[in-house]
Image 1: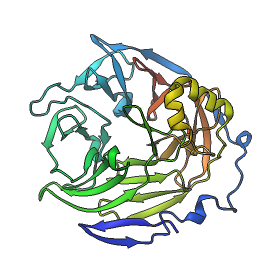
Image 2: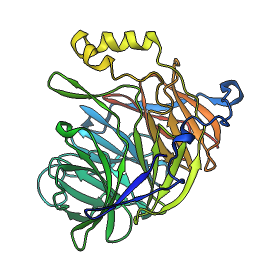
Image 3: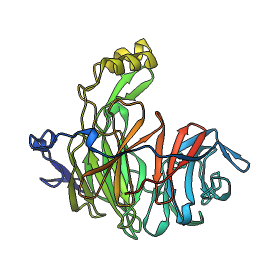
Image 4: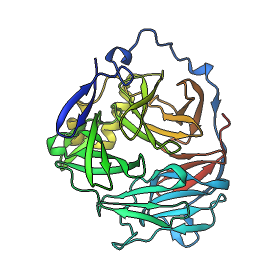
Length: 360
């Protein structure tokens, strides 16, 4: 049985939660075989694409965005480092954060997280600080979490008014480990944590590299409740936990799985080069992870599949874990947000696009 380890301070307590993961669930014999032809396929139409907004030109786009009212959205731009509010037509710049080291200023927008009430948390890894903004990108709050030995904060999720959940990563030198840790912002103290699965790293020249197609742990905010969804792709369960790290519910999912093909290996070898390929090859999985990315929007899960396809293939699941549609977007693109008005799609490093929404 695979356990979810919940730690109280430095005294370990292991809770066996069948609601989270059981090894037997990973390859359950009663899982129904997925027939892709039976799932309604949708190829959304592109509405607009752009590489700048007014006088702001991108050097490198982030990989997430958030919908606002009336089709407007917040877009993360990694270089220059800004959060920007863009109107529904993709032409008007309606707001922008400031770059710098002062109060409310950012040097790294990372992957901002949407909270209840339309606010945003951004963890600036360069400055190791959290900045909260409202839906107009006005600064609400700023603080620096206290140091956490041997781990480095990566992302912040709001749980309640004075408690947040912080995603932590250990250093590569000790082996990649991921934790979701409680943090009381008033007392500036850490509490319980969950030790999570993390994509393995292969040692390459100059550091480590995340192993392509391998299993990973997704953490996605449910901004309406302040909870988070956890999906370890080595299992077939999505768990929702609150700020106290209590399990609220579990959703059983059934996603198609596929062996890593020789053609995919050949492509990796070509892209990596011979030396890095030798280091990575032995870490490659026999079967690819069932999902490579995860988004939550409009009360549905969007999971990017690793199945070989001419498109970027996304499965849309309802809250019962049933696949209701498969959505095809351009190859090598990133789906960044889902709303009733549009889909946000990062086409490449400098080009962002809006696609028509998918009716669910």
